[in-house]
Amino acid sequence: MPRGFGRLVKARIFVTLKPGVLDPQGQAIARALGSLGFEGVSGVRQGKLIELELTQSDAEQARAEVETMCEKLLANTVIERYAIELEG
Amino acid sequence: MPRGFGRLVKARIFVTLKPGVLDPQGQAIARALGSLGFEGVSGVRQGKLIELELTQSDAEQARAEVETMCEKLLANTVIERYAIELEG
Image (cartoon, rainbow over all chains, first blue to last red; front, side):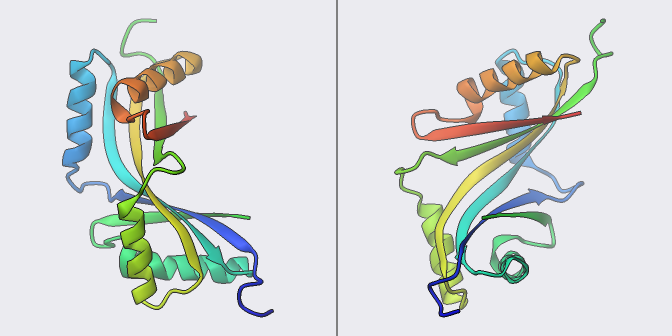
């Protein structure tokens, strides 16, 4: 299939801090929620959500490509883990 | 049911820029992916993922509470929209 005629695959990538890694943003949110009067909130963690579209007709290949993107650029795998969702 | 004995509900909140709102972070990622040799990538958008736990036995009420958190603190509803996922 010539390039540009592949299906458009939509990928959602969730990048979150590994358990045990300090999350100052999450702590700030937890404190702010507390001071706004929300009770019983715990374990607040903030991560990143990256959405992108790929011209790639093969789902397996699309996932492999997005994994490489995560390893090389999107996640810092020392302190972060990532999850990938594909659709389309 | 006395407080502290409610189920622990896990909430995932996805905060993304509304369509049409400029996303410099997304653009930076798109450029970086391009310079790393990834081709056919488009529509890169970066959002936030917030995970938290609620002591709340009622799912309806938990969702309503998280919605209020989004409106009041977690999202800037002028330029961002949010989606909520509950589990547990």
